[in-house]
Image 1: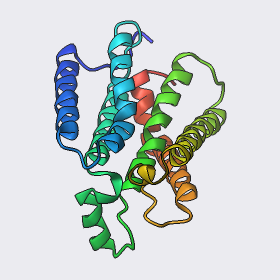
Image 2: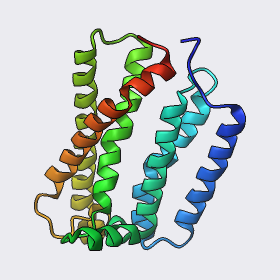
Image 3: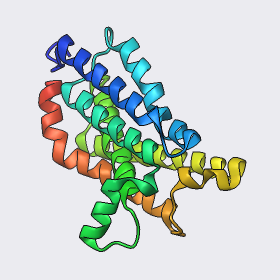
Image 4: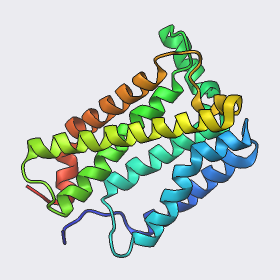
Length: 206
């Protein structure tokens, strides 16, 4: 992939500085320290990994941008806890919803962004033949990631008891797990349908 469309080094340094600034701001006085740590843990894992692998495996500009937005969603949720994010209350008022929907934005992103990650890895490595099979495999990967996250939430609920309430953010919804996975499914399909051609142009594949 010699024609891979990647951001400039300067752009990456600016994005890194912005991410670190958001991370510090998110963790300065979070609503609950343990909840903050659990919510931003993916960022704490992914950021060093991206830095370590950039030289030998740079990503497309589109994917870096999507990862940046996803990290911001996680950090905002960590700062307030998902059920208390002000943006969610605004959306709740606008649409007359019964609960703060910010966690659904997070789970939509949990399908949307990993879909681009999986798609890029599979295409660059030529691991899948055929666009229909690519679509199917990517969606399956995203659902598997979502299911693993729900298992982590279940483990937190068992291990921490009421201390995990802020992390779970179910807000009394008995179908929260199913709707979370449904949003991840919707996010993955949306990413593939809306950004597939743009992603192809950045990957320079036919």
